[in-house]
Every structure is written in C-alpha cells, then in structure tokens.
Length: 316
Image (tube, rainbow, N blue to C red; front, side, top):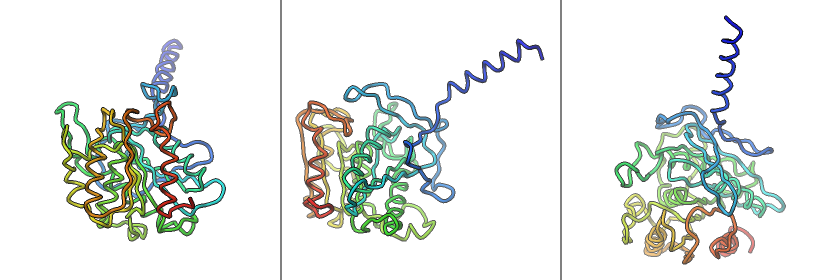
C-alpha cells in the first residue's frame, strides 16, 4: 500500500476516534458498579453507545454534563464525610427520560449529601424512553415500552438495603431524591413498592424497595394537562397511606414541569394522610440543581436538611 494512502487511513482513524465521546465515569475515588448481575430486564435498543458530553447551556454560569444512551445502569456510592448519620439517599438525576443531567442533578448532589454524613448512591438509570416521556412528534406524553427506569430504581433501593450493614446504613433510613423526571421516579418509588416489576434475580430483590423518605424537586409528569390538578393515574391508583414522608419543591414559573405537578401530588398525599411538606416559589425556573443563584429557591438544601431532622432521619 502506498505511504500516502496509509497516512490517509491513519488520519481517518483518528478523526473517528475524536468524534466518539466516552461513556460517563465518576470522579477519582469513586467506582460505578452494575446494578444487575446479568442481563438487564426488559432491555430495549438505544440509538448508539453511551456518551457523556457538555450540555448546550450554562446553569449558574457553569456547564453541565449530559449522559445519553444508558443501556447498562450503574450505581456509584459516595461514603459519608465526617460523622455518619446512618442515613442513605438514592439520587435520581433528571432529563425527561431521554438523557441524564449526571453532574448538575447527580454527582454535585451526592457530594452535598455525603458532606452532611449521609451515604449517597447515584443511580445512572437507563435512558432514553425508559419512563413516561414527552414525544416531540406527537406532542403528547407517551408511555414507554417498559418502565425500565423504575425497574432500575427498585433494584437499587433493594441493593442499598441489602448492603446496609456493610455500608453502615440504618435499613430504616433509606430515602430517594430526584429532579424533574427523577422527581417523578421519586413518586413512583413511593407508590410502586409493593411488587417488583421484574422477576427476582438474587437476595437483594427480597429486600423491601420502599423508601423511608422521599424528596421530589421540580417533579414532572404528575399532573395530566395544562391548568389541571388531576393526578397521573400511574400514581393516583397506587397511592396509599404507606407512602413515605415527602418533601416537594417547585417554582411557579417552571415552564418545563408545571407547578401543578407538585400541587396535585401534595393534595393526593394529604388526602390519604401521608406527612408532606411543600415549598413553592414565584421564580426560579427549572433545572437549577444544587447550584446557587440570586433566586431564593436555590436555598432549598437548607430546607431539606431541616426537614430530614424533623422526621428523625438525621440529628437536627
């Protein structure tokens, strides 16, 4: 083969490698592990390999990381720093069940929780189309072929409870926290814990997947239509007094997930007698995560810390 042709092949190879983006990996000192020991249940094809890229906007003046095409869900454990509260939180990033805002609504939140003595577990759940999502073509909410994200969440809470002793966690202090679509998963986990959506694969699936407390931040998919307070039947038909104590937060100017999402769920929890605390703000929009801005809503971590103390999950 002629030298110039070999060089051309090498150039094309490097271009292809440069065009590929690697799968997401946690920061040094943390290791993600698969949550399923073998094949994932209800596996669906994804458009391509998993990749992690920078989002197309800034939040609080900083970029954020988008993860796409997750077919192998993982969890990453963030051990508590300083005194251990014995509490644990499984974190669900948002992204409309299409992508994951993995740092903005994931790793940054885990760092905050662990700095307060709480074991944080980041769930990188399957996307896209793994939960109820907005279809841009039909302009309507669409049910997935399988509730893969909820399967991943049920599995992960069971795994945390199964490993509670070894991870120095109180098995009665395991909660869930999620943003946007992840907030909807919080509501699903609070109402769909009676039966797993998949056949048990090991002893971890014999553990309860009911969270002991739940935090839903600007949750979506809970109300059905504009100017409607009707709760999504997926939640409404399963809600009982056994749902865990719940914290809700949303902005009235949130044009992605409407304030009615939180209001409808709050009313339903109150109706059945579940302890629930809700905070609404006039301004603040959507998808701000843990990042502080001039908007009062971004002080929400202090509210959650106080609430966790009032329900006995941490020392207040």
